[in-house]
Image 1 (tube, one colour):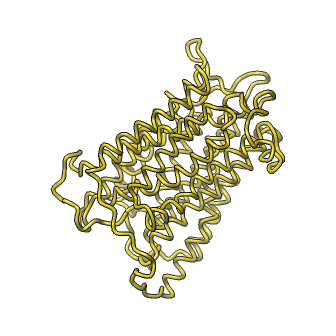
Image 2: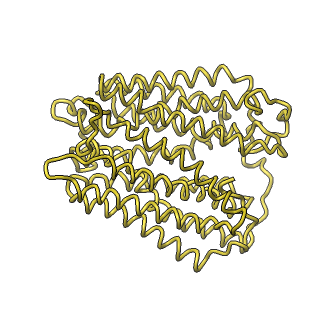
Image 3: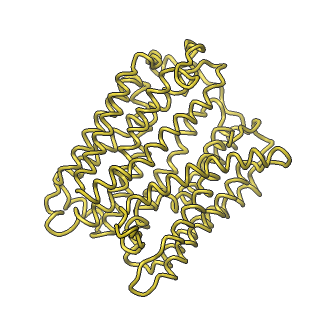
Length: 457
């Protein structure tokens, strides 16, 4: 995300931004369409089809994997999902290293897109299931961080359009997330699993084609320098060391905090598929549409929360990052209690109406808007300039650890009473909030670090 001194400040061909932003945004939108479409189907596909007797025996190298986890059925599906979802947040670290040291960003993104498309199409062949997941993990690692980094490189050091550019870029991401379950999920559930995975592959190919067609509008890769050629960095000050160690200590807390939100793609879908009343005008809605509902609500409240704090800040003191994260923890905890109530009020032998699940998505989305974007702003602000990119890269280890825990905890769905299962998630949200509070009371010194970046600006 480094500024580019050679960028053309007069290039305003795409919504007042460089033309390259349009190509990057649409490429990312289709990549996210394919990724979230596949992810929305993954657990349902395993629980309702692939892991059933007569099907699972066809998957290459599956017995060693099953022996490794020591599970079967829904717990095994949850463990596989958690492992997959955690690794896609770990491999971008290697993807950035490969781009910086060997291939450059352009070629790394191209290789990642091709590998992901190959993985999506392999999902249509049951024996190649594990190889498909491996391709998707590797491809995401090569693609994800490097295409985002190219967005920042479209602008010069003094170009203030950069922040607005990332908002446009993330609109593309959210558009892909909203559309994916409607198309990929509906095809997978209503027509055939392999049709859904095939649609995800087609989406990835469209994203690849857009990226290739816009190559001439993208920033050139900087010369690849060996570490011996890099200028020496000054040592960190005592205050910078304290800030860095404090942030590193928050990573496992962040992992706890994101478990309720990330479980939406795993055990929540399985539970909803079995227990929610999804009938509408005589037709059963696809379960994957719950992901679209969550995406629409999340995007709406990201905007509403940002507008609210801008309005609040005009006449009152706006909370700092940790205060907002504490607010987010409270809303997330309340959202999980909605699922507890849904389980408690489920009629014997009947289905759960959508009032409690919708309330969960609303409250959880308010919590999300106060948690993830603002925690990233916190890390970006507190991390010392000399190692800022490294610390932000380490921030994503919270997603690696959190998704791994999501897989393990989600495996308890069939062995725990539903009320206890969702109370456990509420406890994770509340426990993380308590640790954030202790951090603020003991370690946090908001005026001891650099001036705050507005996390909602």
